[in-house]
Amino acid sequence: LIYPGAFSPQSLHELRRGWKRVYDLTRDQAVQFMCNGIVANGRYITSHVTSNLKDILNAEGLEPVIVDTSEFEKSGGEPFCMKCFLE
Image (cartoon, rainbow, N blue to C red):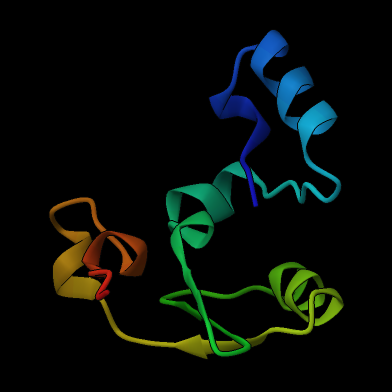
C-alpha cells in the first residue's frame, strides 16, 4: 500500500519495478494512515477502512480489523508504529 504523492517520480518507478503488487491509496486514505496497518495472521489491523481498501485486502486474502487509535493518532501514529517484534 502506497500513496503515490509521497514519492518522487524516480522512487515511484523503482517501487513499481521492484514489487509485484503495489496498491495505490488516495491522499484522503493516506492522511487517515491506511497505509500504516499491521498484517498478522491473515488480518490487517488498521483504524480506518474504505471500500477500496477492503477490496485490496480481499484480493490479498486479508481480513480488516478496525481498532480505535484516536488517542495515538494525535501524536501522528498508527498501529504500525505501535508494534514490537519478539524473537
